[in-house]
Amino acid sequence: MSISERISGYAPLTASEVVQRVREDGLGLIDLVFSDITGGAKALTIPAALVERTLERGYRFDGSALTGGMRSIELDLFLLPDPATFVVLTPVEGDERRGRLCCSVLRRDGQPFDGDPRSALERVIERAAAEGIDYRVGIEMEYYLLRGEWTHLAIERDSAGYFDFGEDAVSRTRDTIVSSLASIGVGLGGAHHETGPGQEEIDLRPTGALHMADQLITIRQTIRTAARQFGLRATFMPKPFTDAPGSGLHVFQQFRGIEDGNDRLRDELDELAPTALQIIAGQIAHAPAMCAVLCPTVNSYKRLNAGHRAPRYANWAHVSQTSMIRVPSVLAGGAASIELRCQDALANPYLSLAVALSAALDGMNRQLEPPEPLEESFSSYDDAGLERIGVQRLPGTLGEALEAFSQDSVVRNALGSYISDQLLTVKRAEWEEYRTVVGPWEHRRYGDA
Image (cartoon, rainbow, N blue to C red):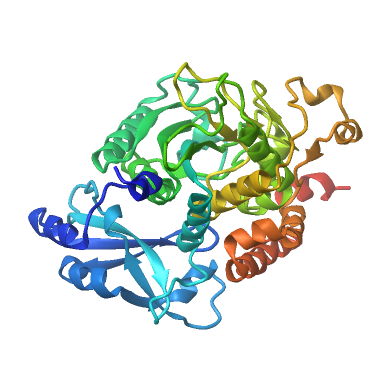
């Protein structure tokens, strides 16, 4: 396997091979998949007869779709499929067979568009590669399967606990998700019931960061489709219910040498290498600003503030599951990883990996040192006490995270000025809208005061 293949996580596949596969498999439709700035999966469907031309020239579309719904002008841009991303999707009964291609977004002159999240991640990966780093990630993603409307009754019937089978509809949905994803070559590690009623987790084996981001875009849609088949609905909200555990997306980051493939997180004595500590320090230093990308919604901070294994502070540990960063133990000969625990599944996977990697590179380049690992419970400290030992609290609201993001040049530069400015515009509008809405809690608290 070449260095470029190892970094991307993809096996080589040419445009001509994609065209041949489309014909041999008798596909009628091809989904051109991309992502908007706020993380939503987007798709443009073409007849299979156009796939050869589209692979050569791209497909023109209105690029204002990238801005997260704030459409003011039309942008003539082009979706250029990456042939290495081609998969044949598992058809729903009665549907036409179709394929999928993940796309980057180009300007008319053929150069990458500054507002394309996939291109932003590619730029940071290339910067890491220039410094000899192969960045690979594994994922643990949590979500809920619900029945009916947004009430507690939607999940009440499922009383299963951690690693239990769950009620029939839940377990059958899980089986369908696993088989569907396995059929399109997703690197699955397993799937199981989580601690909340109707809450599930799916694990993805480590692969190149770009490959992982592409997979996450497809996985969310696959889960939603499978849930509908069994009369359920899937939600990736970080905190859908007040009295049930939140759902996170844990990122297990591996850093290897490009030339030799050696683990850069461990030294000759199988201890954490200075590089690992610098990476941890970089991500802790930029944690407040990263939260605007990793935890991108009003609801994200209700998960973080609620606790239950969700981090409130920018610290690290080996054991504690309430830490923002955890360094789990590994078997002899296994690759070490740095687990980033604050992210949730509503984050744009391209942008979230871009800022995490950029913060890690900054820690390495500036040879930053992290605070001491904090394995004990936070209950014995107040905020002032934690600050005295070098532990800062993560943003408590989306508004606080956006302010930190606006002041952090490393995190902003990871995305580029176009995406950073658009993200601030869209998310500030979301935050201001939320602040004006009167909700049920206020009715209960103040209605008869």
